[in-house]
Structure formats: C-alpha cells, structure tokens
Length: 169
Picture 1 (cartoon, rainbow, N blue to C red):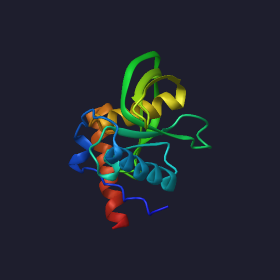
Picture 2: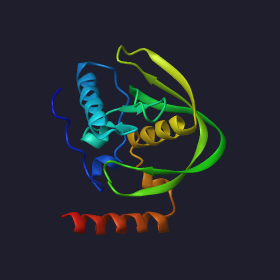
Picture 3: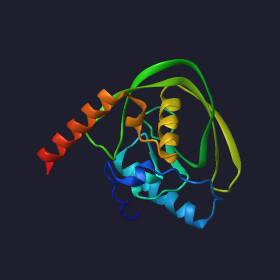
C-alpha cells in the first residue's frame, strides 16, 4: 500500500468548500483509495475527501463497532432525514488535531450514497454511526464541525488549537 496523503490543516479553505455531486468514475475511485488508506493509517472513525485536499463528493465512514473500523466509501453522500432526540457528543477532526468539542446532532439519520459501482444505497443509522456519518457528510458539504457550535465555543477551540500549534511547532 502506498503512503497515505497528508491531512490538510484548519483553516485551509478547502474545508469550507462544498463538493458537487458527480458520476462515480476512476478519478473518484482513486481519491477513494487514498481516503481509505488515510483513514486506516489514522484509525479515524471517518474522513471526507477535503481532509486529504480534494473537494470531492466522497467520505469514508466506519459504521459498526468503533473498535473494528469496518470502513465503507460513500460517493455522493447525503443526509436524507434525521430523527430522534438531539444529543451532544464529542467530535474532532484530523484537520484540527488535539481539539474536541461537544456537538449536538440527531440520534438517528437516514443517509444515501453511491457505491463504487455507482449504485444508489440508503442506510438507516443510529447512535455513534449516525453521528460520524452526519459529521463527514457535513464536511463533504463544506461545513467544518466547528460551524455546528456557538461562536464562543468555536473561538475558544480555535485559540486552543493555535496554542497547541505553538507548542508543537
């Protein structure tokens, strides 16, 4: 396996750009292979193509037990519907390492996506899998996870990240 591509770092503008739906082709599948390699290397619960520098309609998500990382590539992913109570849960990003904040999301989500052959699939998710899918689909749509919290909490997270960068750099 080739070395996975590096992750882009917040506030890279690609994290704010929405990917346009496109047919599943060899170019998109190649990005998917890189995205999958990056997810495996980082042991991420999920990633969007933007994390490796591609504004493409593609995410990889682990739907099962978080310990197993049973990844699935989602081409042209979308949230069809959400349901259930809205629950706060910790979220972070490989593009902002060391930062985790509570984000409120619906407990259940019905998502749609294309598989590698371009076939449409729909899945009903709940709990952690629903959270990860919603988080990554938001990112495909140019919505970085910090956009889902209050300005005060967002500013505090950005300051913490800047402080971490100074310590590490």
